[in-house]
Amino acid sequence: MEEELFCVGCQERWVTSGGAEEPFGSDVLTLCVGCAPSRVLFRADMLQRRREEREAQELEWQREEEEKHNRLEVLRNQVRVVAEADPERMMADTAAWKGRHVTVEEFELRRPLYSINTYTDTQIVSDPRVRVERALRDAGLQHSQYAKEVLSIVTPFDALKHIVSDIEEPQQAA
Image (cartoon, rainbow, N blue to C red; front, side, top):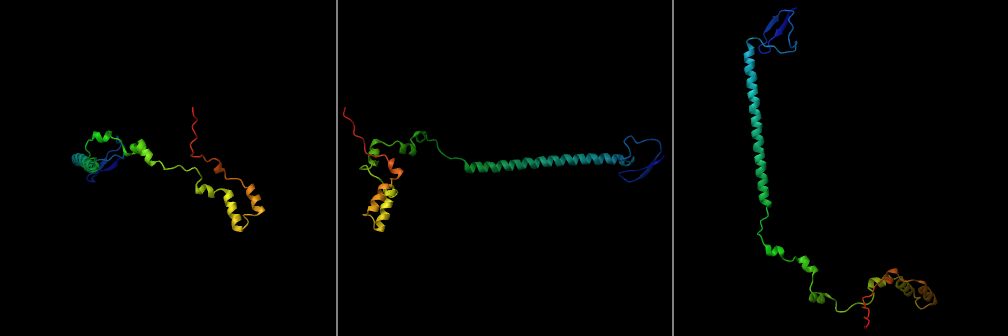
């Protein structure tokens, strides 16, 4: 059985004698004797082009890396700390530390002239007894028997029970 083959390079047609099977099957590209050397040259040229493209990509990558490195170096130079070494300042007390460790004289100056041994206005106004008394006064009933009974029932606010006095306890003589 005869088989027709076409050269991939020049499209020339030739006929093979039947019976001899192709070692790689019919899907293998075939070249005639005239096109085979040019195909080898073509493949060598393609290989050379791929190498050149790879080298060009490598050079481009190196150039981009160099540009990136330069940009980062410029940025580093912009934010670099420029300070002289000052060990005396480094070992000195900070303002926060000085604020916490006041001297006795400064403490005396900051202390109030007298101590307050009473309730604040907010504590007094929040007492329910004061509010009830004010409501009775507004109604004109502050001196009636009803006002006396209501005021005797109303208990002081719990916050007033727990107030600690600023009065110093008298020291016992030894």
